[in-house]
Image (cartoon, rainbow, N blue to C red):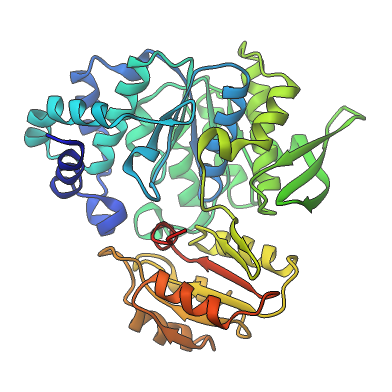
Length: 429
């Protein structure tokens, strides 16, 4: 098979959550266990950090990987979904998995695929673990997909578990309350393995405390160890001054992920580094500082308050649930602009009403949809948006919408593309 044939086989042969939604979700680890057993259990051959959460887990994964790379460690990174290229999901030191490896792996495991009929995600997890073992990485950052407890990635025994935060997302699968979702995400907490939680709510803190205590897993809440004293933007960087408990010295960090919401993720990354240091990893302040300043360059992350043009200001952000959209709207409020243009497309299984009610009525809207089966039809989106006083025209795809927004926007206006990872992925730039 060629690489393109392999990818077509994986995409067409296997149920893929990002395309079809809940029907592809398998609440069971047996397939992943079988796949990895057939490969000699590669996940047992490298050290790892396991990261779950509703929002921020992708940013935290990339930032932490960048810091570890800068500290001189061969670092694997597994994330999902991808934006442009399937191989973005599996990287070592920022380099995507090779096309040849994808072909070889797919051909070798094809008989087992025919027997087990695994999900797309189950296969890619096994591929990532096999690749990291083959390349003998020092450490791998493994981002959980959906939930945690029953996520395919949850067969690893990591050095550290990290849970960024909890919000209402995938409620049709994970549960309809913050407590239920927290319990699912806390499923990555392992016996005796330290866990860092980025931020807690009154509903979620008791859940984490109980599960961590039951597992005898030392629990640290990052937002209680450090706090952001001050922040500012300069030349597309977010500059954050951080204070630490029991220390009078403040430290300054420059982030090339300039979204204001990254201040929370920064605190989580810093505490994760502290925990890894206690496990023998040599991660200097210089490595942390430089890794954070160049995390996009080191890891190839896109779609997090990504500025693709400055006049008018055009920003791409993969925010797609209630908490994520709130954070983007807060960022918009503190960013200089005249008129606001929002290009919006979402998927069917999101809490549409909870998201739409957040958007400002005064913005100019360009409604569209991504080209996946899960996309909410643009006609439905316009009707629902109208219920919340949001008005605009429909466009067949995001690039047509963006072209129109560029024509209508003045040089001091702002254009934001958001609502779905898949919408952002289709932007040509």
